[in-house]
Amino acid sequence: MNTPPAPLETAVARFLDYLRIERRYAPRTVDNYARELALLTRHAGAQGARCWGELQPAQLQMLLAAEHRRGRGAGSLHHLLAACRSFFRWLLREGELQASPAAGVRAPKLRRRLPHVLDVDQAQRLVELDADDVLVPRDRAALELLYSSGLRVSELCGVRWCDLDLDEGLVRVTGKGGKTRVVPVGRPALQALRALQPAAAAPGAPVFPGRRGAPLTPAALRLRLRRRAREQGIAQRVHPHLLRHTCASHLLESSGELRAVQELLGHADIATTEIYTHLDFQHLAHVYDRAHPRARRR
View (cartoon, one colour):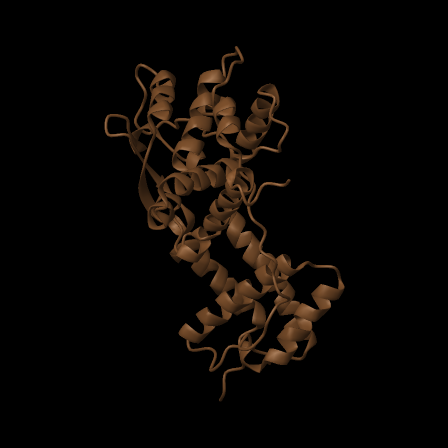
């Protein structure tokens, strides 16, 4: 007697468990996958698919077209298709698919936007807080470490005193997918961290505590950073990832070492890091237009 195919939802639930347990994805990332795959599941069911092997590429393309008509942008559709592709790759490895329904399916062309960055003077003004309140040491250390080492906001919030080597100028952080890396910390950031460190800091205590001693949440850190930027007279919208972009751009501009910037940021693919070369060329073009005799307007 043949066993009927497992419901579409069962395979999705197993895949989400795989992301959560084996790949150790962040809860927010798993939630994003769950939302996109729930949409895919509803569409597959409406198309009459009883198992994932019955879904055809043309039907997946229909989903993208329908979402596009509903107003989803190119970037959002790329996220949807990426989630589908990851799911289908997992099904192929599990032996539950013979071919991916995403084969040959394309989302609308994505216009890659360059990240905004602070210039050197703005970055220096931001980290050198001149406010006078009890949270200045913590906020200054957070700003310095973000700019110094290009950390993601989740990485910064997760740093504990045992992750820091203040003598060697290093910090160990856990990034996407539970991957750990060790990155250098600049001298001003080290000074700010030493000023913040309690006399008897427990090794497992968070470096940046919030209320009741728990680690500061990314949302709370974003609010603090926005407030400090206003206090420092910076009109541009400032957020933690802006400082990560700024760190990478300034480092690449000064060194030209793309591989080193990739390692610092923890990018799995150097193509992700290469966007900062475009920022560097923008800087070059600006200098050229300002300084070259043939570029000056008469």
